[in-house]
Length: 163
Image (cartoon, rainbow, N blue to C red; front, side, top):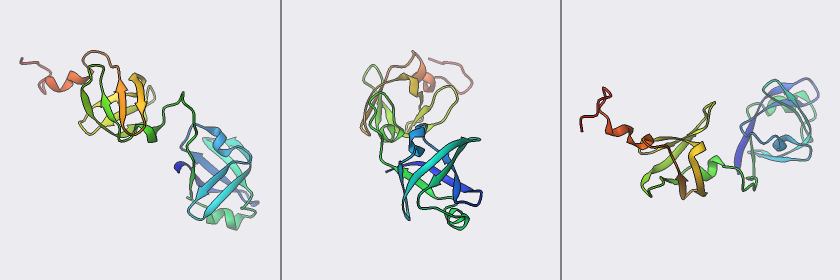
């Protein structure tokens, strides 16, 4: 199960809650969607965009007290099978291999960045996701990067190359 969002707080008196998605897939809060929590499943009865998240009505939450009890609840769901998407859970742990077949370390995290998310490796490299060409989930991440991206460690700290 993947973490897809979090209930932040109640909204109103009828059991509606504010949900902040950590996924860009809004179908996670579509009518009929079932989200898992540590205390059991929640079924989306309705949702609508609100500020930076959604106001969601869950079938299992019918009053303000129950909504208050759900505050800060983590929402989880099964991965969506979409071969055209890169998924963070498939990148983490994969070995980054450049176009020359050189191992550049394992992906430890994916950093959010407005221009392009960035893979961070245990070897200290930062690789924009836009350069990913192929992924074997959790095993291998092939990248085709511009010349020099992996050569940054060849320079001296003051920027001079003393080669």
